[in-house]
Image (cartoon, rainbow, N blue to C red; front, side, top):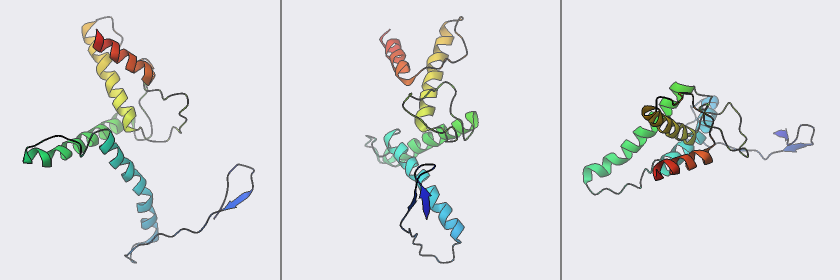
Length: 157
C-alpha cells in the first residue's frame, strides 16, 4: 500500500502484511474488524492491571482470592459504563482539561484516567458544597496538577 507521510510529500510504500486465521470460513471483513478491536482489548487489560490492581491484591482467604479480580473488573466496567452514560462515547468530561503538551483528537473516547480525575473532582467539590452553602455547583476547569495540589491541601487541613 502506498501512503504519504506529509500532505504534499513523496509516496512511501509499506511491506505487505498478513493476518493468519485458522478458520477459513470467517468473512474477511469480520476478521479485520476483530483485529482492530484487539487494541481496545489490550488497553482494557493494561488499565485493569495498572489502575485497578488486578492481580496485585493481597488476600489470603481462598474465597477472596477468586473474587478480588472480579470485583476490580466490575468496578472498571461500572466506571466506563457511567462515563459513557454521562458524557457519551466520544466526548470527555468537561472539567478535565488535558495538559498543554497532550494533543489528542476530540473523537477518542474518554480514558479511564479522565473518568477517575472527574470522579475525584466530583467528590472533592461535592464534599465542599455539603459544608458550605456558598459553594458553586459549576465545576471549574482545573488542571490535574492543580487538582493534586488541592487534594494535598485538603488532606493536610
